Length: 440
Image 1: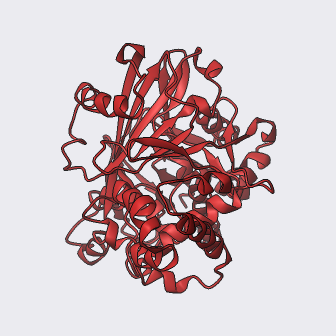
Image 2: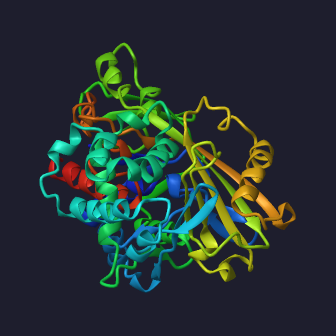
């Protein structure tokens, strides 16, 4: 009997599935298929000068237990680095610090009592135990109730529009935002400082350490730059056939860890029309990250929320205010990030077009910024960066079990009520691997 398994898409979900399967059975044979040249999915990296850099900004929160557990299991705890976060808000042509309760008290755009109410609303959200009612109301409805109109209009509404767009922000479920507040709140230490984590050597080093572990017994074959063309049930209804490149292989179990629209393309529409129609209910936003390698820093802020939806980015993340610039030949690395539909004009721009479009906005925020300080720039795009978590999302969330026997769908749109990210990718991957082992 064929005992070989297959994992399609080698992001952190796929790599975690392989890790958990081999932890249970070190002799298992596994094929990993990845369409890109780099592993890691949205956390993959690229060559920037003499170092590896994440295509999309990444860090871990202090609450990201599942990442930390895996790192310690790999005996790599010495590579786990914790650092203070420095957050700011750009609003009404001014930058405000927004990392601590004192910063909130000094946030003058809000009337004093609105500042107090905002702080109390965050504490209130941390105390909520029964959160199911938050699945049925919008983030807007919930925020207006707990923070009031002033805080909603000045702080939350611009961020929701910047994250989900004018067409979607009113549909976002309150539970999505509540989970964000819980995660960020628990990341703070007793002095109320938020602690974020990173991996020594960056995410490429972490990916390499996982790959070294899962390939140590030579039972795992990783196929990069390989496109899957079709997935179907074997005639005996127990095995799964995967067509990729010019090969057709039969597996005992197959795990697909990409996104719903990508899976739809691999299935026979006539055989699985009902299932495909269910998958189509999940809507996504894309993301671009324009990365600037600069000789000069923009500011001391690591993460600057841009509370002005007219800007071409919702966040300015100066990575070298988090990870020391010494790791990057002494240069400063800045991410300009925006979530938007793939049809949006900004998303269709080339790197040069987007850079030229963004520079005037950067100069508006940072008057001392000089275009001549840019040494290099890079542009990365992802069509399916953020599933839109709407009200009663649980009713449309795709299940890991599919109509194809022994074929599992394991994706970021299933980590609800949590949000996508490497922490829950690892948890989700390990959980589905345990389920598959149990049902072998």
